Each structure stands twice: as C-alpha cells, then as structure tokens.
Length: 287
Image (tube, rainbow, N blue to C red; front, side, top):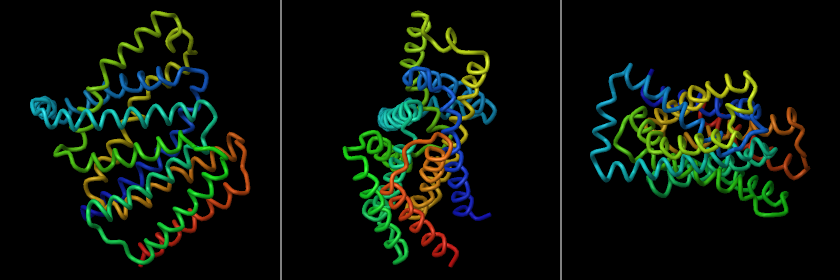
C-alpha cells in the first residue's frame, strides 16, 4: 500500500472510532468531566508507556525533552489536546452531542483552509464546492442555536490547531503523543488524588462496570490518536479535512436517534448540506 493511501485509511479509521467513542463517554454522564479527563490522561499514559517499551522508543522520548524548542512544541500540543478533550467530554456528558457534531464540522473547514493558505496545497473545483457547502452548513446550524455555540467553536478550532501543530513537530506519532500525555500527567494525578481524597472520585462512587470501563480509557484514547498522528504526517490536509466529517455525521445520528436531542429543521438542512459536500468529495476522490 502506498504511503499516502495508508495514511488516508488510518485517518478514516481514526475518525470513525472518534465518532463511535461518544457512546463510550456517554456511560459516564453522572461523573465530573474534569476528573474524567484526568483519568483519561493517567490511563493513556499507562498504555503509551507499555507501547514505548515494546517498541523500544523510550529513549527517543527522553531525548525530545532535552530540546527546549521541542518541549515548547509538545506543551502547545498538550494544551490543545487537553482543551479539546475537556470540551468534548463535557459536552457529551451534559447532553450536547449534536453541538459536538457542529464543532467537528467546523474543524475540517479550518483544516482545509490551513492546507490552502499555510501549506500551499491546491483545491480542485469539486473541493471548493464542498468547502462552500460546508461553510453554509455551519452558518445554518449555528444560527439555529440562537446564541454563540461556544462548545462547538472551542471544540472545532482546538482540534484544527492541534492537527496543524502535530504536522510540524519532528517526532514520530508515538513519540509525540507520549510527550504530550506525559506533560499532562502531573496535573491529572493531582486532580484524581484530590477527588479521591474528598470521597467524590470515580473509584469511590462508580459501579464495578463503570470502573472497568474507565480502566479501558487509555486504549480507547490512544488508539485513534495514534492513527490520526500517523495520518496527519502522510495525508494532504485538503484530503484529510473532508474525512473529518465522519465524526460529526456519526455524532449527529447518535444525538438525534439514540439520545433523542432536539432535531430542528435548520439542523436537518445544515447537516444535509454537509452530507452533500461529502458526496461531492467522495465522487471527486474516486475520479
């Protein structure tokens, strides 16, 4: 399989998993969103350390921390990742799944624009048409809220910025992600300890099934992130951007059909425009 094709398939699988993961996080709706992110960070660290040991990449990560410039880059990535995670989990556990869909519609638009203006990639006519439809869709769905959809905006822009910054760092996928998570580990452990000390932590109040699911959060988190990191270094952003619409499409269906969130005419129109854009991109890609 060619390098570009393997990157594209990795991206498709990553985004599909991200869409489906909404079901997983919805199981924790009664817990504090910030503690969930802290727990997610802790257990992701465990998974990544095991992977690093198996791949014998631990020294590469340690070497990366010897470069102030690389550490600064990793810190930026860690901040963007934590912002995106927290916003997403907060939205899901508080019944805003459809708003997460809007956020993930915003992100691919930004990704495509970054590809054009920052990375000098060129859009074909069909891609420009799809981009125009996507912009109209976001405007329609956003107007339907009657207020600024802050969760969607933070979610979309943080992920768009993360993808661009990820492409610039001179580290392999596993090394970069491990560095980001390690920078988040100390504050995560402190938060978990505080919650447990107060008797309000998940390990104190959760059922055995909820705790077992939580212990799997490292694998649930690390798998699509590693796939995305692999894809982001091998796939043009003007191609990777439209693939990102898999996440909001899945979240839209989950929010409307499974979790029975309000489905207005404006939302239906907006999401229909996006799906039309996806159809155009798909046909153009096949050609």
